[in-house]
Image (cartoon, rainbow, N blue to C red; front, side, top):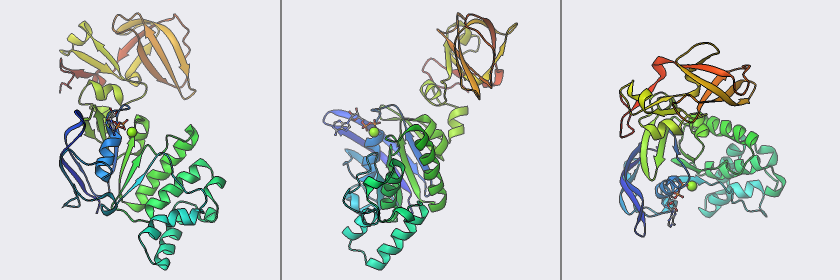
Length: 334
Ligand code: ADP
Ligand code: MG
């Protein structure tokens, strides 16, 4: 259960084509993340799958059945939004029970499912509280609980953690990943945050302007970005992109080197430059090197601490087997 296939799915709002014909298969039990800049069509694509928007063309199949015209409630999918949309006057139990009550499910089965969801989500102790008496993370768990009890073929998450503070986001990220391991149900998760995508996904779908730029595992995208866009989007700090004579030496229009794949020396190396700003994170140091003649600045990441002062001269050497090459169309050269 939970295999979803999109076949030339298209979406237009008026004359504007937001999703050009798009093919994608989501396998049963996969954790798939849609990632891309704001406005690239992630939510629209998720809403098309959910049935909250009608497609302008193409076909959506769920477990082999044509679901293109199936109303949302009959698709067997459960959506979790950024705003939790809990009923403030209802207890946690009643909030979680809501979709089951609407479906007229028998009371004993409702309770079995609610107690099970509460246990999975560590909400058992809060089951009689109202949302106002819960933390942000607990509220988000109630919203997820309401999805779990429906026992859907797939969970659809649209930026569910955007309202939470940074520490809580990391915690919830782990909880949702754990939840997926336990339930083994297909999950589609939308985010603009590439770190969330890298840490959570089995499969990442990178979108830009409604187009799929690349589909692959986090490490495939990190190691072999298909084009300059994916190269710049996946990885933090961003990959350095260099054009001009240096790229031509590698028979490329653009070469890319990640900040963590540059060796630093005070005395010798391939590229000479001047240290600008440094960012000391303790575990890592990021610093920016100017006047290399290659790009306005190059970002370098070293593990741990490094003693560098602004305006120091440094020499940088890219690790030869970590250089990415792209052609004049921005596509990866093998
Ligand atoms: P994302 O979730 O990646 O930020 P969206 O899917 O929300 O992007 O939006 C994709 C594009 O579609 C945007 O340009 C947005 O303005 C447009 N769009 C979304 N919903 C509508 C709508 N109901 N009517 C018209 N344009 C829309
Ligand atoms: Mg969105």
